[in-house]
Amino acid sequence: MRTNHYRTSLLTVLAIVLLPSSSLFGQEAGPARPKITGISHVGYFVSDLPQAIAFWHDFLGFDEEYTLTKKDSKDIRIAFIKINDHQHIELFNEPPTHPPNMMSHLCFTVEDIKAMRTYLRSKGFDVKAGNGGKTRTGDYAFEIKDPDGMLVEFVQSLPDGLEAKAAGKFEPETRISTKIYHLGFLVGNSEKSMDFYGKVLGFKETWRGGGNPKELSWINMKVPDGNDYVEFMLYRDAPDKFGTKNHISLEVPDVAKSVAILEARPAFKTYGKELKVNTGVNQKRQVNLYDPDGTRVELMEPNTVTGKSTPSSTAPPPPPSHD
Image (cartoon, rainbow, N blue to C red):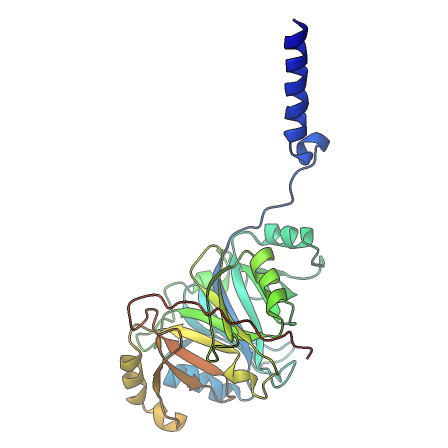
């Protein structure tokens, strides 16, 4: 009987030792990250709003979904260019915050904005109570900064928001694309960005590459609960023209056909630049366009020319920038 008693006591002790510490002290694990389902939008500053709208409307074939005016003014502050029911571009009619960078911010759609705020606070981010709330477009949103100071916004669309009310509208057949494929932006410290977008936000690395076999140039990170992705544009020295690095990529099924469509439009003469199709290091066909302020718009096919996935680079990233 004593042997059985000792055996029972020993098993009890082992069971207690193996219990998670949270069970011993009544503590629960930190709040779970809510789903991040995709890219909602990207914002760009523009120096001439009519010219920028003409580029997106007359040349690329998109429609304005709606506009917001400046405070106490009839002047337009933001023009919203609709890509599809869940994605758009915001054109800010004001000088850039940090010239020559014309990218204002990027925004991801989340399933639960309140849970996202709670989750980020649990990770040490100072998301103040006054940061965010219901926007002028009728959705819930707030923003923080990534390691490079880029504004990263999170939004939860609401049924009475302007985007929801515009569902199925402002989607002309002239649109050169119906999807934001990815957003590219400059990253000065790849390790810190991997920690932020990967460990904190849950993005998954899908590919890395570069034109130089000895040094990495790009890292692609996919949203955790969707197919959209961001592209880290790594650098050793900050470029003079941010717009060639900070870019938006629009998905098209056939780049050559897209170029033919654009070249046939009257606005192509106003655009005045060659449309040259290239095959990238990732083995996907693409063509680069530039808005009136030099911000790059990339049209890219989703599949490789080989029909096979392109191996990732094993080159090291450039050393962290101190800029």
